[in-house]
Each structure stands twice: as structure tokens, then as C-alpha cells.
Length: 197
Image (cartoon, rainbow, N blue to C red; front, side, top):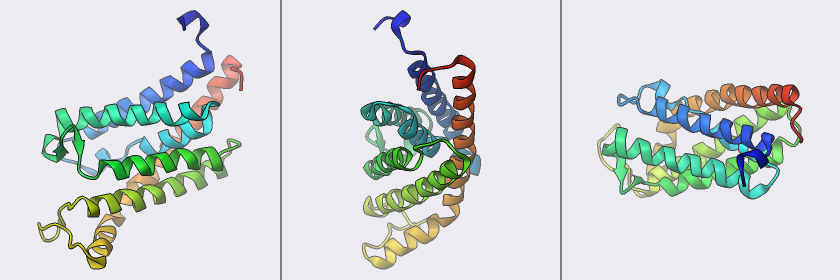
């Protein structure tokens, strides 16, 4: 496909997804892992992809590819101490959560509205919390309070989730703010350029 034949709506969608990946890398490059590093557009990117691409495979493929590339950059160049191969321990659980976040965007944001974006943002934060922290526990990650791996029982799993509660707020706030930016900006661009729905 030549640039001349590129659908303008599709090109704008790809630019939004690319912008989300760049923001994630810039924020994630913080080697101190401060709270701002966790305030990423990943959840909003998944919701936006799910709600905006007309072809379902694109709604999964482009956001997942962006997540994968940004993960590789972060693990290999900025946080090699967390790397296990090219990614990190438990990465597959994050990707499973991401697939469900895209699905939430497809199901919950049939029509762009503030209430739909807010509900989907909350759902995406809960999905990410449930899957990613299960992955942390399953992968044998370290309990920050003891310096030892989480115990392989219900108590260890429960502790993993409890310790993760403060971090969930960053996912939720990121989903809400970036969701408002992505969906709001895209609606404005569509109106200005009169892109086909």
C-alpha cells in the first residue's frame, strides 16, 4: 500500500498508538522507578485500540506490537536488572491482561462517551491488577517486605495482591487521563478532518 492510498483515519489511529508507546518508554526510562514511571498510557492504549480500529485483528495487533517493542526497549536499555531474556518474569500475564483490556474497549466503548470511557478505564485497571499480579506471584518474584520470593500458597498470593494495591491507583489514573486525551483528541481530529467512521 502506498502512502497515497493510506486511509487517513487508520494513519491517525497508528499515530496515537505510536505516541502511547513513546510516552511509555520516556516515562519508563526513569531508573528510580518513581510513581511517574508507573503513570503510563498502556491501559488507555489498549482501550483506544479496542474501541477505534474497525478491523478486530488490528485492534489487538498494533497495540500489542507497541507494547512488545516498548517492553524490549525498557528491559534491554533502561531496566536490564528486571530482564529475564528479552522481556521480564511473568510477561505473558501482562499480555493476557492487555488482550482483555482491548476486549473491554471493544465491548464497553461502542459509543464514545465520558461514562463509557470512565467505566472501561476502571475495568481495565482491575483487569491489569488481577492478571499482572497473578503473574508476579506465579513467576516467583520477590516480596519487597522480606526480600524473599512470595510463598507458593494462598497467603503468598494474597500478600502479592495486597502489596500491589497502591500501584493500582497509577494504572487507574493513567487510564482515565490518557483515555480522555486519546479519545477526546481523536474525536476532535475526526471532526476537523472529517475522517470516515
